[in-house]
Length: 582
Ligand SMILES: [Zn+2]
Image 1 (spheres, rainbow, N blue to C red):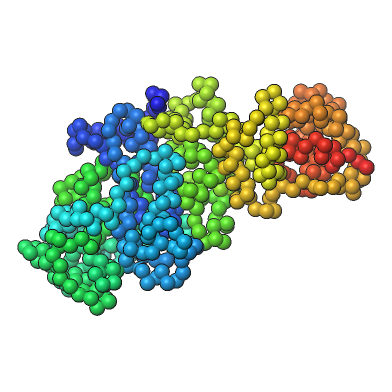
Image 2: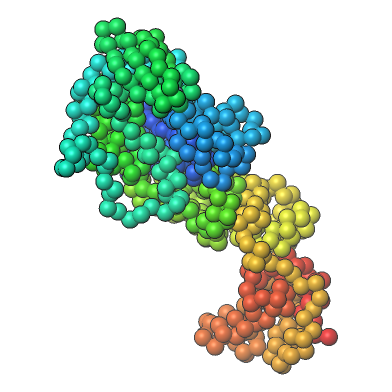
């Protein structure tokens, strides 16, 4: 079970206070509802994880305090298919003919195990959410709409279409010349980069439809055509008493249906969202910053939920975009964008949770796919050490606790968490060869050797995946197969002496700590200094020169993995061969 934590006022705790109080005010004694919404319109971008992670962390804190809480994850799979995304394998331009259909009516990419487009892209996210320990109650909007769950709400919205139109009209910009509504003006703001646009696309922000205003007036409901399945329809008449609705489609189809029986259409987004707040009794639902402008769905929804559906707007913080560092180049060549599943291949679930837990929703941050991931892991390991010895600060302890466990229990962890950068270096050199990897890892600390690779998993697997997929070939380490005879022959007396000292001390110092001491000590000995002498600028320069010499002799470059790790990885015999002057 989760241990009782004094999670002193971090952002999660403060929202939990607010949500619990609001729940007591709105519906005393009832289960608290928080919500997220995701549109499976294509691969679900890593940036969209914040949409789920923010309410998850708040819900989890509420659960830890012993309250009943339900995290609704609305799959907006009844949304229209808007465009054929780039870089998705198994599709071609012929998918464009499905534009306008519900996402659940579009065929899945070729070779998919799933019945349709929406299910195909949901599946990867579902898997990632499970690995992250996120508990939720999934709701398919296709299922809700096509089984008539929202019948009353739809009829109610149609009856009050005049009120809805009036609310929306406050935000419509009239063109002075024609008196006709015109498209909202582009906001003056920093242009979004490609990843942010992809994230915005996935969040439903692109779906700012507020309904058609054809000759017959405004209708907040759009049927999907019976003939072509697309939403290129226009409602031509509606009778409140009989609920008779007539529509035409650009394909030529026209029909009249009874809305009291008809289940193939949906409320437009700006009405759909507030309808669901009222229907589910949502108390907390964050949204992307793209929803915050005047006339945006969150702002308009606040009025519609109150005036039309008799409900209340959730507490709805705007969250900032989450960027990706290091993957841009690789992803643009593939045309794809990283998903939460991609991140979980290179980092463990607690680390990914921690990135979200330690930043307030309105702070943007980047998820590292580049070298930065090593520093991030160092920081996490330091935090774990502080938690273990009790020196951790309260806010850091809260973030750690939210990362490492949920109300349901601990997340899986690596039994022996060796530094990520060490694992990465070892795998870099062994290219993932298990036997060789185990030999090197067991040499790291001979007093307490690693006995099986499983002790170091899953972190080892994450580091291996990172090295093999994210580190460009030119940055990989390739150990020389033969000595650099030319360089060895050109050494001066000091160079030769330093190598001699290395060879003499090798066996005695064959561990990570031992080799570290040996390598830093050799330039001191040559300078006539004590082993514990304070480093002077001259000494630092000598150390650097010595290290560059070793990198050149071992891997033909000026830099590489940390030298003690590199020596262990290369092996004592091979090191001797490569640094011995002929
Ligand atoms: Zn049609």
